[in-house]
Image (cartoon, rainbow, N blue to C red; front, side, top):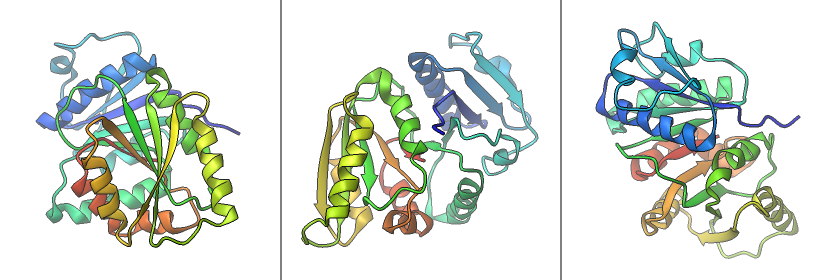
Length: 249
Protein backbone atom coordinates (compact mmCIF):
# COMPACT_ATOMS: atom_id res chain seq x y z
CA UNK A 1 0.00 0.00 0.00
CA UNK A 2 1.36 3.41 -1.00
CA UNK A 3 1.53 6.07 1.73
CA UNK A 4 1.12 9.45 0.07
CA UNK A 5 2.16 12.68 1.77
CA UNK A 6 -0.81 13.96 3.82
CA UNK A 7 0.68 16.87 5.78
CA UNK A 8 3.86 18.53 7.06
CA UNK A 9 5.05 18.91 10.65
CA UNK A 10 7.63 21.22 12.17
CA UNK A 11 9.24 21.29 15.61
CA UNK A 12 9.99 24.76 16.98
CA UNK A 13 12.49 25.75 19.67
CA UNK A 14 13.32 29.29 20.79
CA UNK A 15 16.25 29.80 18.40
CA UNK A 16 16.60 32.02 15.30
CA UNK A 17 17.15 28.98 13.06
CA UNK A 18 14.10 27.23 14.48
CA UNK A 19 11.88 30.27 13.95
CA UNK A 20 13.21 30.60 10.40
CA UNK A 21 12.46 26.90 9.83
CA UNK A 22 8.89 27.50 10.99
CA UNK A 23 8.47 30.25 8.38
CA UNK A 24 10.05 27.95 5.77
CA UNK A 25 7.54 25.24 6.72
CA UNK A 26 4.58 27.65 6.52
CA UNK A 27 5.54 28.69 2.98
CA UNK A 28 6.27 25.11 1.88
CA UNK A 29 2.93 23.88 3.21
CA UNK A 30 1.15 26.76 1.48
CA UNK A 31 2.66 26.02 -1.94
CA UNK A 32 2.03 22.28 -1.51
CA UNK A 33 -1.57 22.90 -0.31
CA UNK A 34 -0.87 20.70 2.72
CA UNK A 35 -1.91 21.05 6.37
CA UNK A 36 0.88 21.97 8.80
CA UNK A 37 1.19 20.62 12.35
CA UNK A 38 3.40 22.86 14.52
CA UNK A 39 4.92 21.31 17.66
CA UNK A 40 6.18 23.86 20.20
CA UNK A 41 9.01 23.16 22.61
CA UNK A 42 8.17 23.48 26.31
CA UNK A 43 7.60 27.10 27.32
CA UNK A 44 7.31 28.43 23.77
CA UNK A 45 4.22 30.54 23.05
CA UNK A 46 2.48 30.42 19.69
CA UNK A 47 1.29 34.04 19.90
CA UNK A 48 4.55 35.50 18.63
CA UNK A 49 4.81 32.90 15.89
CA UNK A 50 1.40 33.85 14.53
CA UNK A 51 2.53 37.42 13.96
CA UNK A 52 4.14 38.23 10.62
CA UNK A 53 2.91 35.13 8.78
CA UNK A 54 -0.42 34.35 7.20
CA UNK A 55 -2.07 31.76 9.45
CA UNK A 56 -4.66 29.61 7.72
CA UNK A 57 -7.07 27.04 9.06
CA UNK A 58 -4.65 24.37 7.84
CA UNK A 59 -2.08 25.28 10.52
CA UNK A 60 -2.50 23.67 13.93
CA UNK A 61 -0.32 24.34 17.00
CA UNK A 62 0.56 21.75 19.65
CA UNK A 63 2.17 22.44 23.03
CA UNK A 64 4.65 19.76 24.10
CA UNK A 65 6.58 18.85 27.24
CA UNK A 66 9.95 18.46 25.49
CA UNK A 67 12.82 20.93 25.34
CA UNK A 68 14.79 19.49 22.40
CA UNK A 69 14.16 17.84 19.07
CA UNK A 70 15.20 14.36 20.26
CA UNK A 71 12.30 14.15 22.70
CA UNK A 72 9.68 15.22 20.17
CA UNK A 73 9.65 11.81 18.47
CA UNK A 74 7.79 10.33 21.45
CA UNK A 75 4.93 12.82 20.96
CA UNK A 76 4.60 12.55 17.19
CA UNK A 77 2.02 10.44 15.36
CA UNK A 78 3.48 7.10 14.29
CA UNK A 79 1.87 6.86 10.86
CA UNK A 80 4.22 7.25 7.91
CA UNK A 81 2.35 9.87 5.90
CA UNK A 82 4.05 13.14 6.83
CA UNK A 83 7.45 14.84 6.84
CA UNK A 84 8.93 16.49 9.93
CA UNK A 85 10.95 19.68 9.46
CA UNK A 86 13.55 20.68 12.03
CA UNK A 87 16.12 23.46 12.11
CA UNK A 88 19.40 21.97 13.19
CA UNK A 89 22.79 23.57 13.67
CA UNK A 90 25.53 20.99 13.22
CA UNK A 91 28.80 20.83 15.15
CA UNK A 92 31.21 18.00 15.86
CA UNK A 93 30.51 18.48 19.56
CA UNK A 94 26.89 17.39 19.00
CA UNK A 95 27.63 13.97 17.49
CA UNK A 96 25.98 12.28 20.47
CA UNK A 97 22.70 14.02 19.64
CA UNK A 98 22.95 12.83 16.05
CA UNK A 99 23.53 9.25 17.17
CA UNK A 100 20.30 9.50 19.17
CA UNK A 101 18.57 11.11 16.20
CA UNK A 102 19.51 8.23 13.89
CA UNK A 103 18.10 5.70 16.34
CA UNK A 104 14.83 7.63 16.61
CA UNK A 105 14.46 7.86 12.83
CA UNK A 106 15.11 4.14 12.42
CA UNK A 107 12.58 3.37 15.15
CA UNK A 108 9.68 5.59 14.07
CA UNK A 109 10.28 5.68 10.31
CA UNK A 110 9.63 9.42 10.17
CA UNK A 111 10.96 11.23 7.08
CA UNK A 112 13.00 14.18 8.35
CA UNK A 113 13.75 17.41 6.50
CA UNK A 114 16.77 19.06 8.13
CA UNK A 115 17.23 22.80 7.59
CA UNK A 116 20.84 23.83 8.22
CA UNK A 117 20.65 27.61 7.97
CA UNK A 118 18.17 30.45 8.01
CA UNK A 119 16.61 30.72 4.56
CA UNK A 120 13.35 31.62 2.91
CA UNK A 121 11.50 28.92 1.01
CA UNK A 122 10.68 29.97 -2.54
CA UNK A 123 10.67 26.82 -4.63
CA UNK A 124 12.50 23.58 -5.39
CA UNK A 125 14.52 24.14 -8.57
CA UNK A 126 16.78 21.10 -8.60
CA UNK A 127 16.54 18.04 -6.38
CA UNK A 128 19.33 15.50 -5.90
CA UNK A 129 18.39 11.96 -4.89
CA UNK A 130 21.39 9.99 -3.61
CA UNK A 131 21.22 6.33 -4.60
CA UNK A 132 23.30 3.16 -4.71
CA UNK A 133 20.66 1.26 -6.73
CA UNK A 134 20.43 -1.50 -4.18
CA UNK A 135 17.03 -3.10 -3.67
CA UNK A 136 14.53 -0.94 -1.81
CA UNK A 137 12.98 -2.40 1.33
CA UNK A 138 10.16 0.12 1.04
CA UNK A 139 9.54 2.43 -1.90
CA UNK A 140 7.09 4.68 -0.05
CA UNK A 141 9.87 7.19 0.53
CA UNK A 142 10.07 7.88 -3.21
CA UNK A 143 6.32 8.50 -3.40
CA UNK A 144 6.52 10.86 -0.41
CA UNK A 145 9.34 12.80 -2.06
CA UNK A 146 7.45 12.94 -5.33
CA UNK A 147 4.36 14.29 -3.57
CA UNK A 148 6.48 16.96 -1.83
CA UNK A 149 8.15 18.35 -4.93
CA UNK A 150 5.38 17.81 -7.49
CA UNK A 151 3.94 21.37 -7.27
CA UNK A 152 7.32 22.86 -8.23
CA UNK A 153 8.26 20.64 -11.21
CA UNK A 154 12.00 20.69 -10.39
CA UNK A 155 14.73 18.91 -12.28
CA UNK A 156 15.52 15.64 -10.48
CA UNK A 157 19.04 14.21 -10.53
CA UNK A 158 19.50 10.59 -9.44
CA UNK A 159 23.06 10.69 -8.08
CA UNK A 160 24.88 7.36 -8.06
CA UNK A 161 28.30 7.21 -6.37
CA UNK A 162 30.47 4.24 -7.37
CA UNK A 163 33.87 3.32 -5.88
CA UNK A 164 35.38 2.37 -9.27
CA UNK A 165 34.80 2.46 -13.04
CA UNK A 166 33.44 -1.06 -13.34
CA UNK A 167 30.56 -1.44 -15.76
CA UNK A 168 27.11 -1.41 -14.19
CA UNK A 169 25.57 -4.82 -13.67
CA UNK A 170 22.26 -5.70 -15.27
CA UNK A 171 20.60 -5.48 -11.83
CA UNK A 172 21.94 -1.96 -11.27
CA UNK A 173 20.73 -0.83 -14.68
CA UNK A 174 17.27 -2.17 -13.85
CA UNK A 175 17.21 -0.41 -10.47
CA UNK A 176 18.41 2.84 -12.05
CA UNK A 177 15.59 2.77 -14.59
CA UNK A 178 13.11 1.92 -11.83
CA UNK A 179 14.16 4.89 -9.69
CA UNK A 180 14.06 7.30 -12.61
CA UNK A 181 10.57 6.03 -13.43
CA UNK A 182 9.36 7.17 -9.99
CA UNK A 183 9.80 10.75 -11.20
CA UNK A 184 9.02 10.54 -14.90
CA UNK A 185 6.88 11.81 -16.57
CA UNK A 186 6.27 14.27 -13.70
CA UNK A 187 9.75 15.81 -13.81
CA UNK A 188 12.78 16.11 -16.02
CA UNK A 189 14.88 13.31 -14.51
CA UNK A 190 18.52 12.49 -15.21
CA UNK A 191 21.07 10.01 -13.93
CA UNK A 192 24.50 11.17 -12.79
CA UNK A 193 27.22 8.70 -11.85
CA UNK A 194 30.24 9.77 -9.80
CA UNK A 195 33.30 7.59 -9.30
CA UNK A 196 34.81 8.05 -5.86
CA UNK A 197 35.86 5.97 -2.87
CA UNK A 198 34.68 8.81 -0.61
CA UNK A 199 30.88 9.01 -0.78
CA UNK A 200 30.57 12.10 1.40
CA UNK A 201 33.20 14.08 -0.47
CA UNK A 202 31.74 13.19 -3.87
CA UNK A 203 28.23 14.26 -2.89
CA UNK A 204 29.50 17.41 -1.18
CA UNK A 205 31.47 18.60 -4.21
CA UNK A 206 28.62 17.81 -6.58
CA UNK A 207 26.14 19.83 -4.52
CA UNK A 208 28.46 22.74 -3.74
CA UNK A 209 29.19 23.30 -7.43
CA UNK A 210 25.50 23.72 -8.32
CA UNK A 211 23.66 26.69 -6.84
CA UNK A 212 20.22 25.59 -8.10
CA UNK A 213 20.21 22.48 -5.90
CA UNK A 214 17.96 23.24 -2.94
CA UNK A 215 17.06 19.76 -1.73
CA UNK A 216 19.23 16.67 -1.17
CA UNK A 217 17.34 13.42 -0.51
CA UNK A 218 18.82 10.30 1.07
CA UNK A 219 16.85 7.08 1.54
CA UNK A 220 17.55 4.75 4.45
CA UNK A 221 15.15 2.05 3.22
CA UNK A 222 17.71 -0.11 1.42
CA UNK A 223 19.51 -3.39 1.79
CA UNK A 224 22.91 -2.30 0.49
CA UNK A 225 25.66 0.28 0.84
CA UNK A 226 23.40 3.29 1.22
CA UNK A 227 21.77 1.81 4.32
CA UNK A 228 25.24 1.11 5.72
CA UNK A 229 26.13 4.68 4.77
CA UNK A 230 23.14 6.03 6.66
CA UNK A 231 23.82 4.19 9.92
CA UNK A 232 27.52 5.09 10.05
CA UNK A 233 29.21 8.40 10.84
CA UNK A 234 29.05 9.32 7.14
CA UNK A 235 25.65 10.78 7.94
CA UNK A 236 27.40 13.35 10.12
CA UNK A 237 29.64 14.19 7.17
CA UNK A 238 26.67 14.86 4.90
CA UNK A 239 24.89 17.02 7.48
CA UNK A 240 28.08 18.83 8.43
CA UNK A 241 29.31 19.58 4.92
CA UNK A 242 26.14 20.28 2.94
CA UNK A 243 24.25 23.45 3.80
CA UNK A 244 21.20 22.75 1.61
CA UNK A 245 18.01 21.24 3.06
CA UNK A 246 18.53 17.49 3.54
CA UNK A 247 15.63 15.03 3.42
CA UNK A 248 16.34 11.74 5.20
CA UNK A 249 13.53 9.45 4.14
